[in-house]
Image 1 (cartoon, rainbow, N blue to C red):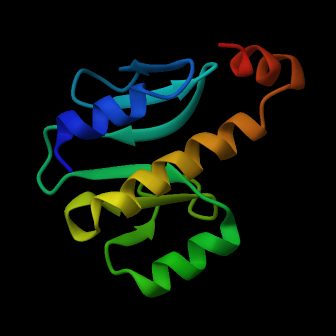
Image 2 (image 1 turned 90 degrees about the horizontal axis):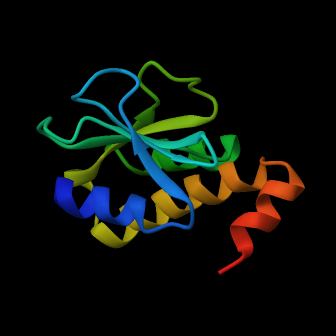
Length: 117
């Protein structure tokens, strides 16, 4: 997955936006103002921080050397994923899971607004 593909995939989710609160080199992808992915798209290797269910995070880290506790994040809930170390399909699934976890934590009224076409 290229940086452009990662950006496009993150922005394809309903109500997703890109912000740069940590400077111009760090893309923060949000839904309803809440972060679901963080990446330095110019960095090599390409890495992305993604939210993850804590129990699944432990299993993923044990099974995949390209997945480690989230750098500068709550390590229980966030993973840093080296994109080049995993199949594209898996990276897309991890991003989607992160988005879904963040949406699930939003107030009901916001979730209902996101469900509208």
